[in-house]
Amino acid sequence: MYQKYKNAELVKPSGIDLKDRLVGVQRVTKVTKGGRAFGFSAIVVVGDEAGVVGHGLGKSKDVATAIAKAVEDAKKNLVRIPIIKGTLPHEQKGKFGGARVNIIPAAPGTGVIAGGAVRTVLEAVGIHDVLSKSQGSSNPHNVVKATFDALLQLRDARTIAKDRGISLEKVFNG
Image (cartoon, rainbow, N blue to C red):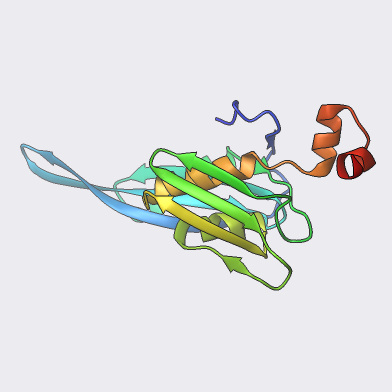
């Protein structure tokens, strides 16, 4: 799922205290010759509020089962996100489908300035100070995936130093 991100660190769910947050539940209808068949799809974000986060989708005939399936799916897709002093290492844009998300690091005490699905993902990661703007589609599925796209592109100074084969001081001082 995260093959295109070279610095995406996959995490095993064992031994991590994960909190799940419901992003949205949709009632979907399939019209058959016998009438309408109702089902539900749920999108859930799980995170330990310390840099580990994942998202999942569950579908079922009833809401509770759909949410349970979504949580299980989310636990299979956990990744580690770099956090520096409760905010992001740098500004980043993410996109998925018609959704565009821009996340910007903020000074301590700013809080999470984000709406809807973006807020849910950022809170699950454990980011406390961030500015964000969501543009284009407001479809929660695509907004969550666009936010993940932005988060997975984040790199901390240590990663950049390792990739370039230089010291940490040289990254900052040139």
